[in-house]
Length: 504
Ligand SMILES: *[C@@H]1O[C@H](CO)[C@@H](O)[C@H](O)[C@H]1NC(C)=O
Ligand SMILES: *[C@@H]1O[C@H](CO)[C@@H](O)[C@H](O)[C@H]1NC(C)=O
Ligand SMILES: *[C@@H]1O[C@H](CO)[C@@H](O)[C@H](O)[C@H]1NC(C)=O
Ligand SMILES: *[C@@H]1O[C@H](CO)[C@@H](O)[C@H](O)[C@H]1NC(C)=O
Image (cartoon, protein in one colour):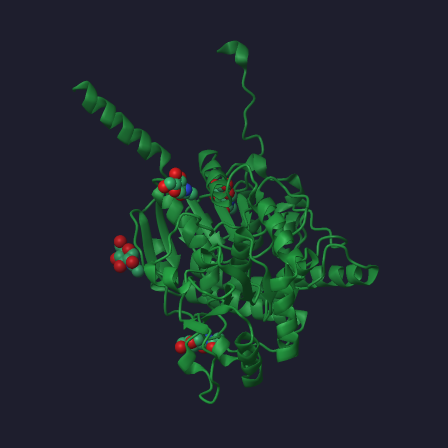
């Protein structure tokens, strides 16, 4: 063989060794959640891994080695059709029940009863890793067991209470607010008591409303030999979570719990000609308004829309508003300084120097982009983690919160004028933005590093804290249920055999 040929062959085989077969499953039908994961998976594919992706959102821009396995149509998607009257004020318990239903039992049932799941059960393909979007169910962890591979969970919100005991994550309710409350880390004694109740309630209701049913569904599909889903969660290798101490809070963490807020942020994109033009204005600047991919601003109350229109009419700013104007009530006339678009490249717009304010529902995706770009936020939280997020930004004086119910022209004008003309908001936002970006590696690089680390060290059990074995779960005792045959499936801790240097 010629030397050059040998070298090329060598390079190719080296590449083969380092590329893994990854199975990724995102059972939940929320578009904004998937955007975060898609960027991660596409980057893994670009790095040479073969990524089979089960999701409701097949890509519009196919790239090599990113293989869509669509489950679209199995579940109603939460995309542009969540109207406000559907999202009333909910108690914590109702909220937990809703999460357990729409992000837990329903996706579990839909995916495991699909042809795709049958195909995966049948396939002879060998995988090296399972990556799953982790939200309201442990169901998909069954695939990790099926293929005997390590599992990585990606949480697209700040951390969820029910994962803490499973990985031994310190989650002391005295100073770590539960995501289903909207407390700030510095809680009063009463708030701490309530936060503790919320913590226990979250774990109990996850067990009762989601895990119990999912266990049955999973055992029907994978077979009765499947360990309890709790045990599979307990065996998880890595948790990537959409939070960061610069915008959430400093908290103790185990090594396999890694904060990667900003994962979806792609600083290397350019604006299309159309939006380049839209962002040029003779006015004082641009106000960007978007309520994300799930909520329709068109469904806002007429009085609220009127308040918005009147406020914007009297401001020397151009407004870019994500909506389809023909869906507004016909007797409302939007002022001429508002330009409506049904879709906008959010990140590129927010980072444009003319953009001075972001009016948002406070989702993690949009607000972390605004923080990245240094744009103050007017937060109108609608549901989920949005109040939780906005309160943190209000405390840092980079945002103002405006409850939807309180919106009127006067209050809206006052809030927007403060954000635009009081320099403290921009100043603080610039500072927070710097802290958010100043990391040893970007969020995406960090996530990739740890995922490849888990592949390289076959699950990296040395990252796992022994505290994970102290976990309590409802309805059974851990040690009682794990029989000898199950025990042998569990990971061993002496992964690193002591090396005897003298003998080599
Ligand atoms: C969204 O639309 C789909 C299909 O049009 C529908 O089945 C689903 O119930 C809607 N979801 C909500 C929350 O309205
Ligand atoms: C599973 O594999 C068997 C044999 O290889 C094949 O006959 C069957 O059609 C497969 N089922 C599915 C759902 O792919
Ligand atoms: C962004 O683009 C520059 C120049 O093209 C390149 O050097 C850099 O690696 C890119 N960054 C990312 C994160 O892709
Ligand atoms: C636990 O995880 C390891 C990899 O980290 C995997 O090989 C093993 O199959 C998992 N155990 C079970 C019971 O799924």
